[in-house]
Length: 244
Image (cartoon, rainbow, N blue to C red):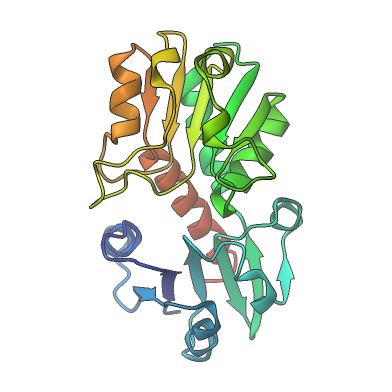
């Protein structure tokens, strides 16, 4: 059975997924399938993609939350999180999943190892941050959301003491992503120490300015590449529950 898969988001000029799945098809000897990048500037255009006969989609910024009303069903986990990054379409029925949770949890535990983390700062309040919050809650790590939105802890209220008291800092925003590599979250980086861990969901560039500042302070750093691969593999598993 041929696979017609893809990624929706905006913009998608330097997306990882099409080349990753093209390589996967080649490795598995699958020559009747495709994985396309659908760069859509508003979520309503997803209906035309559904009508084109796709059997599975990944979802990235800025549509992980906005896509939900266009789906027929959510997995239990995706419903609890309130964000979707994987869709499977079977017999016209569109079901949303969240594989970011699997990818983030596995890659985070690989980073922090046996370190005891009690408090974290989550930078950003979008769809990606929802998966991060879900995982931190399951791991028993207390966290605060940092955002420009007034209902959260705003960047202007951060100080050195706040940074020192939160040993894990996770960037879920696109700040610092290629080509805007000179950008980074506005933090009092002088509060960082060798006991901190900085995790950036951005994977391009390999080392963002956010991570470079952490590295300069001796903190442990990790980008989003491992998470991306893990969530992609989990998406593939979901699609292949019926794509045989």
